[in-house]
Image (cartoon, rainbow, N blue to C red; front, side, top):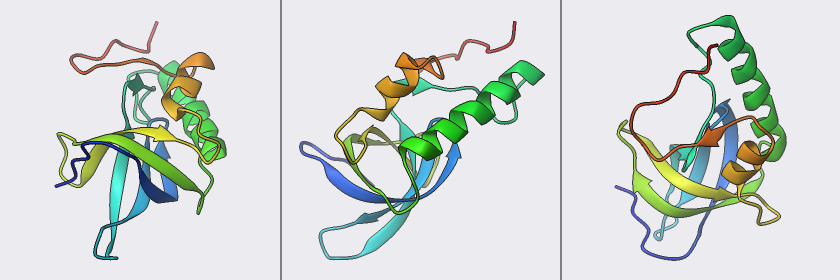
Length: 125
């Protein structure tokens, strides 16, 4: 179980899954490295297997942008870590190597929208 009370945890990006999720290696206190999927907290991006063509196209754009923001092998900081509803995945605020909040960047660029849980709004028109 991953729960962080305060402070940031460094992680190394392995690969991007979609516009708001990526895989990372996280070093634990005993020097063990675990692989975990990280869902970026407070942002929702379109789904790769979306309900319509527009959503799928937008999902690919968001995923490609996240890959630019979080290149493979880059070090990111994970904050406010909580277990996710899916086993093996955590939710976290993610800051890139320059200290920028990645979720806010995606929202500001129109590739995602704010999300605090609950039923997601459709991306289809």
